[in-house]
Image (cartoon, rainbow, N blue to C red; front, side):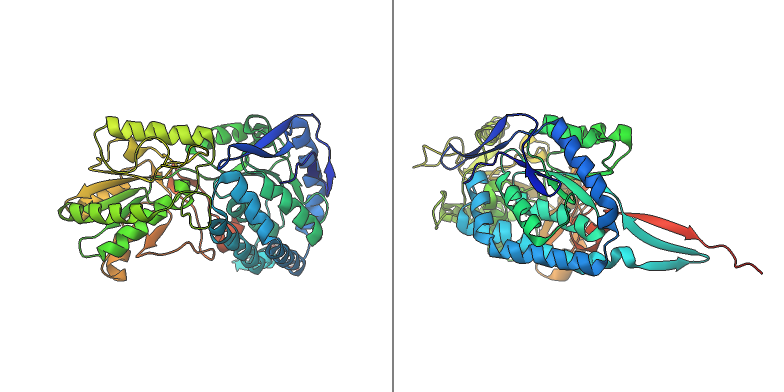
Length: 475
């Protein structure tokens, strides 16, 4: 990994205002692999002013020009896919062979898809004697997470560029490296100076300054619900638009007549991939009480197949940091104290892993929905199995949560599953093994956030709607 000692502001690499640096730690080896600048409020101000200066010009570019640049960015991402994969794998722990398809391929596709929506600012509709069109919202601040850093980077940046916005990006302190690579790509793609600016640093300083800056028009944040509340408070005095993709504790209903083996395998893999560090993970598996024993046997069999490590055969890498490892361990302890049955895994590191922030793939059964492990986001490879006696009870349990980001249903037929999906209060539902789709909008209900990312709906979030009232022509 390279060490970076400059920030990308106004189309060039510039030294930060201060001399502080942040260490990037490889969670598989517990060693420092790179350092990046610790930006400050002064750096934020410089970057925001650059974005403001660039806004008028960029927002008035043609949709064809913006489309060409987005496609060029996607091409350059494809050419540097190996570097992007290595940067993500080394800093957040996802095994490299999985990070390629899980962390990088999708964002490249998404960038190409955003190029289809640049015409949004050139469309006009009529409403009586009025014209209605959309314009870019302005200067945007992006505060990104560490668990899917490129995915969320592209979900915000691609949509904003398509709409004609300019931006300042703050990567997570834990996983900033792919953002620095993306800054190089932005420059090579020919993005005008000031449209994209990168300021690394701590949330308490850089994130706070972005939220409070009077020349920032919109903040898009991905992270925990707790942090999202603070983001909203910081942005409120300047009445910014705030969109957020926050926490989740997603339910997964398996019906009594479903293909149980396929349904259980899908559910276990969904939670364990990326070491459970997925906001949409289906961490509450709701199963028919009469089939609990069968489910338990299937879970044990699948978990026994999961290899933990960083090599080519590993399905699960370490969690992202020592802090995250300790949080997961604390929740495993809470589950035991609450009386849940430990079906697989448990406290401590897996056998053979003394170094690295590895967690055993852990499953609790006989979980009640009022237990903390069923209500709070653990963000690790911990699955809770909750029995239900009727479908109505399953739906009630699914909706009994402060969160509403995602959900899942596995039923005998797609029609049956869709009928259940309509009853669940969540912004996303995976039906009978469905996969994430970059052509569809993504976002949550309730305390899982507001706004949508990806697809045309995601681009709309970065626009204002203007209504033009036409007068009658003079006689």
